[in-house]
Image (cartoon, rainbow, N blue to C red):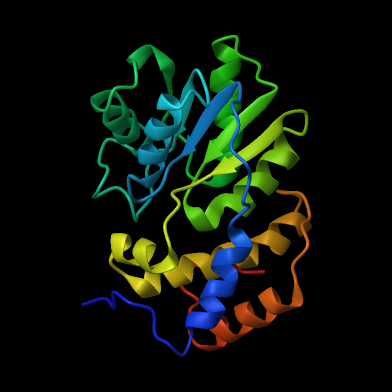
Length: 220
């Protein structure tokens, strides 16, 4: 059985990384929303709420499948997000679908293509992602689509509540550590813009890697 709570010995470091990835953007209306696929419905929940609040007139749900999502979303992440949004009051004509993407770069690039196909060329986009994916989504979009203004949003859950919603503390920590690695690594590879990484974030990351939270690291 997976652990459902964060061990106290690593909690301060996990909180440091969790807070680092929260962009704390002030939400404002944008020309389009982009909901990045994942292994839970959190992004779809955010998209429904923000659409109701008038934050965007249309949304692209983007995401195919991965080994970690295919059992939960057999028809593809974006398809299930769309179904959830329609069932919760978002008009079908306000939703565009991109069901091929398997990573964040493809999410952004393919969503842009879908919008262009529908003759939508936004000057601003509101990107909805998992809480710890905000910084990487922002950096990726600014690299691939530098002419648009980017606002990031995610479920406003405390760390412990988010872990409880996923049901697997190690999986969540692995994902947070993996996203932290990608901030600098992907900038070096030209996939994202460079961002400052405070020393306390570097130290927390290193301790968590040493503690064995390496399940989502990529080869440097």
